[in-house]
Image (cartoon, rainbow, N blue to C red; front, top):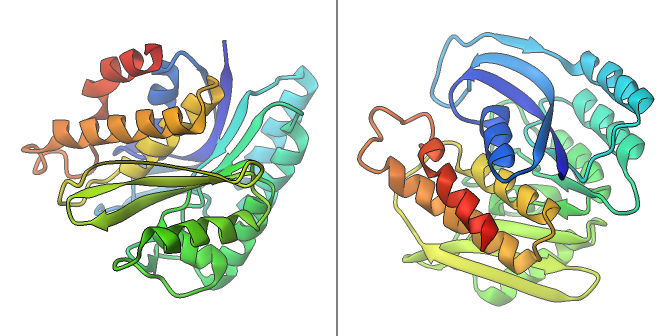
Length: 279
């Protein structure tokens, strides 16, 4: 059985980070392990008055214990990291658990729609860039790509040549594979493009563009593609599974946005994910 450890926060209510990653990775037939970076009563997207407990300084103790037990992972997958200190500690975690044949996967969660999420700065983006240098795979959206490169965000009106150039420049950070999400060349479709620095190969996959904003889709996509890569699927197949499953989750939520505004109904789609991994 493959084993993934995912490092990110956990919200007691709401669908994001660990509450999305753990069930999805498990449904894919992978042993899912967790390093929680913080515990929140709810996620921060649209909720107010939520509680927050920082677990930053528990991470090194977890890492030391696991090293004593000689636990190995097929992939280490990071999501939302909330501070400079957490980035540094996760960087050390990569050093401790990197082997010759596992994957370090970074979703550089920092912003969307051309803006930083609350609390993040250009200085934070510079530190995240250093973590991406150690990754085998990075999963930025268009906003995060611009922040990592320290350049202007271009959210529309671009062409395939621009996206390919963006991917190649991101790969110069040191990562082997760059996966860029939220790519759209017309109003009807949206999808993903990737670039493998070692082979020079580009991959892409697009599906229908469903209007609206749906919480947790980024975490759904990142969890699925991390699992697919750990299972040994090639990049093209991994992207297809992740995009198709994310779209299915959105479709299952349409018509229920009032009750499930805080996240897509991915739980109802897990049987489909299991089938996708068998094909």
